[in-house]
Image (cartoon, rainbow, N blue to C red; front, side, top):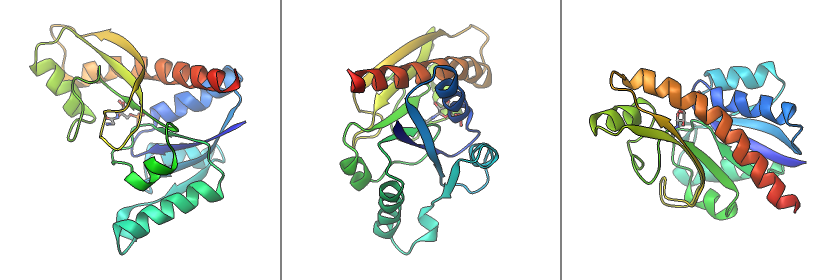
Amino acid sequence: KTRLAVFCSGGGSNFQALYHAIKRKKLSAEIVLCLSNRSRCGAMEFAREHKIKDVHLSEKQFPSFDAFTEAMLETLRSNEIDLILLAGYMRKVPDAVVGAFPERILNIHPALLPKFGGEGMYGLNVHAAVIASGETISGATVHLVNEEYDKGRVLMQQTVPVMPDDSAEKLAERVLACEHQLYAEALEKLLGEQEA
Ligand code: GAR
């Protein structure tokens, strides 16, 4: 089984959707740990309830960024992680971790990259920007993570309509429902390709 680490910062609905999809689709993968920069968040609570290791790792706990990075690498190594899934992780993954997991880190972004990505583009900011630009179509993107924020190769995208009376919250909800399907499909595809 492919050993997964899921990185989260918030509600963790994508994490939960992945967890359930792995069971439902009988994927050859196991979520070994949930890593979060926040000790208390929906994602970490879900992990504890489901007996998944919860690892709280924040820069603030360490004297330097290098020490933080080293702790992250050690966590991933000691748990024999094969693949990292970012699911609402609102931090940039340290370059050394990206380097140690080439083509082995996926992210889900709540818009159609390369549009509406980059620094500052996360959560509701993304949806507010989409609405402000007058776009009639948004969506979700699953992509590989490289050293450039939101610039790694796109694996899968799915579109979602933007309604004339949308608020950022309403659009977020519609996109999130689509993310839950898409992330599971992308994982299934990737695992299938590894086996083939
Ligand atoms: C999701 O919409 C995800 O795409 C987005 O945050 C939300 C997390 O929800 N991620 C980013 O904006 C990353 N740049 P969740 O915690 O319920 O999965």
